[in-house]
Amino acid sequence: MTELPGFWRTEIWHPLSVHLPLAVLVLGTLFFLISTIIKSVFWEDMSKILAITGTIGVWVGIYTGNLADSAVSRQICDPTVLKAHEVNAYIVGWIFSGVSAIIILEYFGFLKKIKKLIKLALVILSIIGSGILIYTGHLGATLVYQQAAGVHIPSEDCSEFID
Amino acid sequence: MQMTNLKLNATVITVVFAVIFAFGISSCGGNTDVVDSGTYSGTIKKVEPEKTEIYVTLEDGKTIELYFIEETTLTKNGEKVDFSALAKGQEVEVEVKKVGKRLDPISVTIKE
Image (cartoon, rainbow over all chains, first blue to last red; front, side):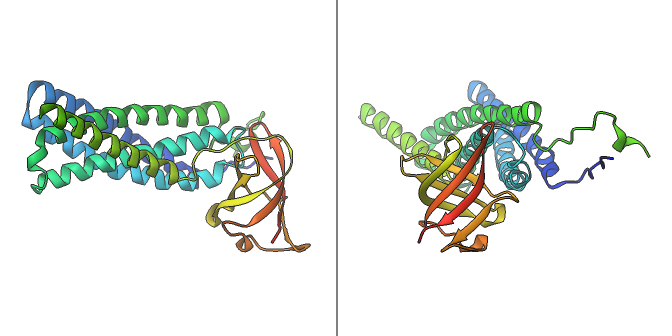
């Protein structure tokens, strides 16, 4: 008889931690665009808060992803997808770390002389970062829905669900 | 003057992107290749002890990623050795079995 594995497995922490930064960073990028178009300080401040929060979330996601990697890489049939997911996640992490560093340096008044360039760099980096982030999410989804990465597949007779 | 500023801005942004992508790709061993089942010689590019995983650059320049499995044997001078015996830069001979696009290492022999 197959035994039902416990829910709180190592690989579970990754999906639990990646969706928040995904939503926050895409929303932050949208707010950057809105603030550029309507020239609103409120939207710009909101976008900066979301960018920094999301960046912290991305690195948490990468940490939990590395934990999940050990658990699933020996089970899936195409680890090249996992590798592409990992490489793109690191690129996203560094892009938004760059964005956050610029925001923090600007906040403390270090970048006053190149304010226009900073604004341009933030928008460009955020748009590209969000694009790669969405692609990274897509790769993660294919790992789960096409290769059952980290997923328990019930036995044919569902015997592990019988008390 | 305006043109010079534009060129400077473009250069700064290009450098920022180049650094970010270099960091991103090098942080996790870079992209890897898939080869057919067989025995290959190469050099260890990276060892990840916590994942019992190694990256090997083969003689043809391809890089393969190998996660040790229960069946994997690791030997040096004909004797079984522990995973901790592996280090970056070592010459190795690996026998791999291709399962889908996954490469399961059957044996790893440290040459030096």
